[in-house]
Length: 387
Image (cartoon, rainbow, N blue to C red; front, side, top):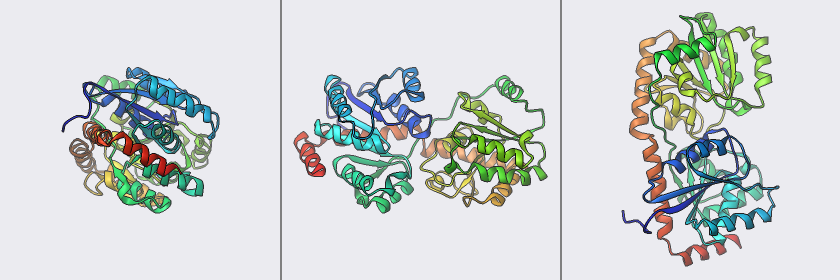
């Protein structure tokens, strides 16, 4: 494909959240993964936090332009100045706030905009937010991270399906974790020889469905009493989940680890990975588990069915169904051969369909396409959409 410009084209990656989370991790991965001979990335965030630290560790130029409320016109001015000062050619925004403001600013400044939607969110509950996404779909290239997210956006907001592209999130298999590192993590967490591990990675929010895994845990422990449940992540539900574990009498078998920087090691010591979500876009946590060759048990929601082939790369159960979770987890804990088969198939699926390279190339193609559209046509489309 012939590139539109000579030399690196500057792409600004915009996020209204600073994570930690899957959407934020994807943004950093795309920004760092673009072909440096054709693209130069910089990052702009609404607020400071985990994502800024991650981007700076990746060597990405990162700016924090604080937004004071959703009607901060001063932010709009500062952002458009940044676009001009840094000679930004494309704006790539992520999630509702950044998609809305990034589209407005980018288009008024005559820059093409790519707006990625990572999941089902509150924007469908408000007429103003639905209207905002209709504008975004006309003034920007809108991207969903799964077919399910595209269906939701179309049905919930009235956006035309032809205006929403799909680019699946991607990940690369991690470097092998040494036996010494695995032993060290087990010792740190007090996991004894012979104990099996169920690993959960993700923010402790209601939508993640952790309460149903805790409900399932006594049934798992009845058949597999040496099981330890590891919850890696932080969030508003932690106190409630700790109380639930205590009331179920399983607190000795549950570890709440908070935010961890050693997820590959946690996955490496796990026998089964569980994602009990009630709603999901296209889970980075599941991708990480598959890339680590861990067998996955997850719910039949959102993009999970696009990731996990039931019975081939993992097991799918209905959401909010603790008995089904218990049965699936117990099946894998008691059948090591089946667990290895599913884990190996999951790794193969990531390599063939959901790699970082494939995701980045898809976005590069979208940037190229947006840049080939004449600036005058882009400006006209922006004015028409924002009337």
